[in-house]
Length: 428
Image 1 (tube, rainbow, N blue to C red):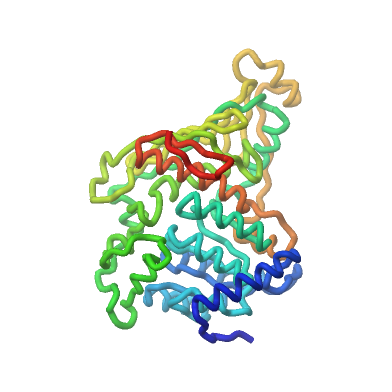
Image 2 (cartoon, one colour):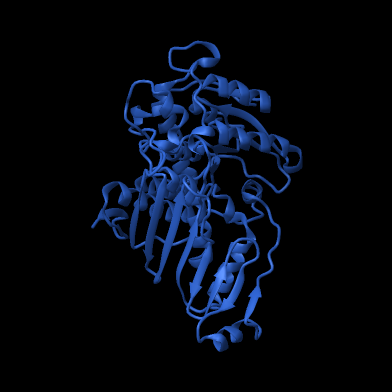
């Protein structure tokens, strides 16, 4: 039995925080303990394009996965009504009312980036497990806060870069630890797009009838979307371009870095550093708005480099101006490994003998991969205690820190250093 009883924000935070702290000390969460065969009851917060895609997939798989989406939330009434129609569940314009429901075990968050951290922490404090779309947060400070909340509250927290579920990166990580290509010293990858109409515009069409003060399906709670009450974004007058095309503006996200390169860095960290990733030492970024001169903040061409404490370097590229990219590739002292699908290893330079010694006498070999669960399936399994997360909060945080450092390097035109002791960015 659930309740829609409304409580004050102050009362909600106070009660959930104190209760969560008490049970966390004992190693439990607030939600019921789920067995392998128990139905997982779900909520979806944020029902735009990405959220609706997730919702449709969750509903389609509900019987096979033994799950049920029982509630959805969005600040735009048209999206909320559409989502309710898909799941036949309750709809809430204010996500906090959804979190009050004690019958919901877990929530998927697909809001704009600047809301990810607050909703994630609120959800965990209300006893719910979380799947958070990438990027995990909007700032490094928020990333540390979410990480610490997961550690404290012991909830199952999955971050959503899809490639982390691909077996090839995990097999690559095992091969790296076995030194099958020798010491890895650098890696590169890219995530590029190119379209006649920029996909950051085409995929995010502006609905001219929507706005605050509009009635019925056209109503948007603009103040709630901005989150200025909690310092999440500046308070500005209604701006439909910002609302519908938030990925183009820095107050709400980091552009191609957070939207696209997060997908690249997380699996590369699995391959090189392991399941929890690694925080960088130093990050630089460059690029600019070279083609898409439509008033956006974000660059259409973005390049970043990073150096890591375990002595390797990274080069990543994301452009919206040409989709011919560079492969995901690891460079070791004895060999090179191409990623994507089945990892392919080959010797390098004068080190054929060393390579052969680690690779069954071969000069070139591939690693067999298995078809496994996608991230949502993996999340369901982890909630039931039968699997390990593919992108846990530790990997999500280490990825977020490097990506955000790159965004700040681009914006400030400075090298960014990570102060590991203080867990803060320092400009060089």
